[in-house]
Length: 244
Image: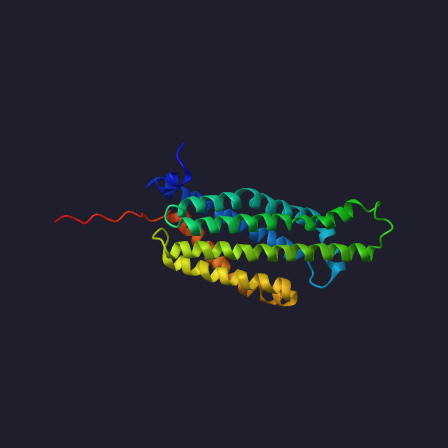
């Protein structure tokens, strides 16, 4: 059986793998946007009662947000990380391995951060068991669980920034993808890193900066995904001189 590196290094296999990676990457982006919209639209910052009421009123929407998040992490996100490793390993093995390690760790942490989002649903399902707990306390616990999930997501972004930095450096040091996309990935790396710190050190600041920090990250992700889907990768073989 041929090794992953040999398969990815094949002149015909690498562009095909790149297009698959690009398509899966777009699914990850779309899934992340949907999950983020669900959580942001039903979470009222600083208001536990309004947040709990919104989730109860739109329970199915909340469940779909968790389900889509879990599905794209367990499938497209992991496969995309593996495919990008296969694509860049033949030309930048250390950076490819670093990107794979950072990417898989961030996926694992992000998946674990989904667990607290199920607390509001458990609260609704277990009212008889929690009869001794007041409504206000249940609402506060729901809000606390959501904030805990947001903190976990901030931890995931910290490792995800390492993925972006390694992939961006691999792009800059190889001919496979335009270097402009590598620059965008490095910029996304810095933005994700900057985004992960306020979520731990200064949460109110994280909410204020989230849009302006995530926007460059979206540009980097979308640029790489669209390029891979549309163009695949460039050849690493030197062109033969044209005979006259």
